[in-house]
Image (cartoon, rainbow, N blue to C red):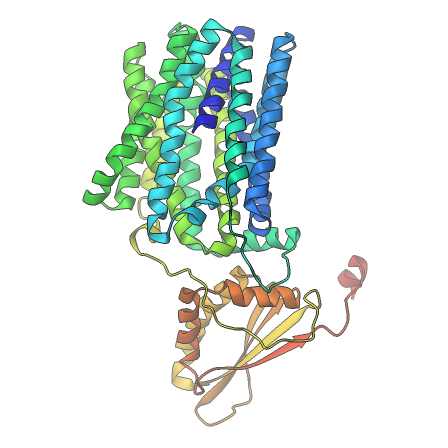
Length: 516
């Protein structure tokens, strides 16, 4: 929280300095784009790294990076070398550190609290962030007004030292496993494949990303509204920015009572509607006090929606892919924020900022109507995503990098269960591919083994023996229930399983493959 206060102090310094250098709403919005664009590009790789390395060490590295960037910004400002391009570039460098930091930071919450307290842990994390959002801009306005932007940047640099000290003293217990280390490229592919075949996660990405895109003008256009339309000084500007944080902290205090009365999905819809109404209000108000009241309400809506979506991600994915899933979520969030800041800045430049606020509010209402039936399942129905703890294989004299591995399963199914079995295997296919299979198929044997019976052959391909072993460890208790349902439709208690290893490596050229 102390470090986030420093970040918000720097944000006030950046926007105030940009307002002194230019009156362009587009250039002002590009500061927000620079800060969030790295989220779009780097969050997914950062999530993959956080799942395969020690998260504590990764967090130490990213915090050191941001300390260095903030220090460089303070030095450039002290030497009067800052231009709009320098401001946007330095904002981009800080954004790189934040993008690499975020998946590991958020994925660490379940390392610190039990499963039934994850929602509370996420809310506490969000509360700390939003307390700093309330305090930081107000402090930033005072620092900029009294001492200038250089000291705002320097204060941010100092604030990272406390975080580094805490991480240095955190005695995180490393996870032990007998599996070979996962490679970065494979981890990236599996994370993307998991997202593609996990519908409950896709719903969260759609609702969260859409909300951030249409809600972005609250942050990207607020400096233009406050400085060039309301003609506020630096202290008043900082206090106005802090109103969203005050609203968010207030929402944190009210959320337990609200959750006792309505479901999380209803709360999500209510917060989205409230935020959309606030955007429409900003399109018409012309005085500072009504703007401050609207920002209080919007701050509460922002906290409610994003903490709900974040909790949904934490509860919808197993631990082995959590940081990657959060990386995808943050990528969508960053892309929506960066793209929205540039888009709404362009609208503000050519049609006026009040038109931009009105269009964003209407867009958010349309988004709410379009996604009203898409519920975040894990918020209402607890999911058992714990590993199944089953030993997949006896020790084999196969190197983990050997492969590819073809797994073949044979099922004997009564004819009257044919349609039901095929339907059950659709869900099996989704789990196999989601957890790492690069190819899957189901065949029907034309020869009838016994009167009234059908032989089905399932096969799926894994890139290596190590990756195949990881697939066993990735299956959750919930997944095993799906497998048991499919297996129970067969004549035998379980299918007959064989494992085949590739006999040679295919080195044909692309030309040969096309014209073979």
